[in-house]
Each structure stands twice: as C-alpha cells, then as structure tokens.
Length: 91
Image (cartoon, rainbow, N blue to C red; front, side, top):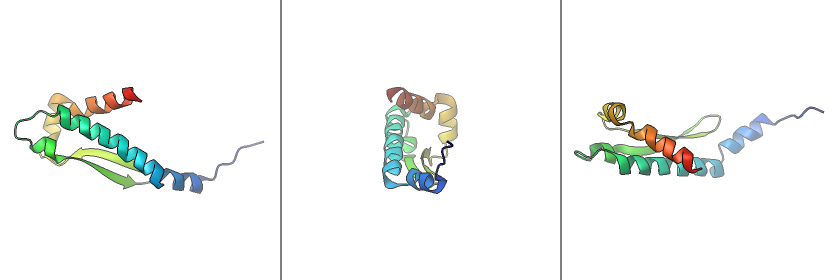
C-alpha cells in the first residue's frame, strides 16, 4: 500500500502560526547571540540586526543586518555563522 501525502495541507501547516512562531523564536535566539557577540565600535552593526519572515512553501526567518559594513564584519569575524552554529548545537 502506497502512502499518499496531501501536499497542500502540508504546505499550509508549514506556513501556519505554530511553525512560523517556532521559526521566528529560533531566529530571535540567533539574532540575540549575534548582538551579544557583535564587535562594538559605534554600535551601528549591533543595532541593525533584525529578524524578517518570508512566506514561501514554508515559513522562513532570516537574521540580517542593514548596516552597510555587515558583509565586511561577517567576512572578518564570522559572527552570524558562529551564532547559527551555537544555536544548532543547543537543539
């Protein structure tokens, strides 16, 4: 007997409020870690860290920085990558 999945129902579940909330909560933990580990010179980078949500087939949360120096800071320090790895280890 073959198993048949209702793809539309699964997609709706993946975009639902419970899943979206869990995804945002995980992204906020990463953002908090990035802010805590951010190199502080003028505070612009730390203040620019934010979480945004995209609705695709599933809910996706992004941790991003709007500071123009963000790419340079990440390239030199890897602060976002380290925060994501720390969060993954805590699961």
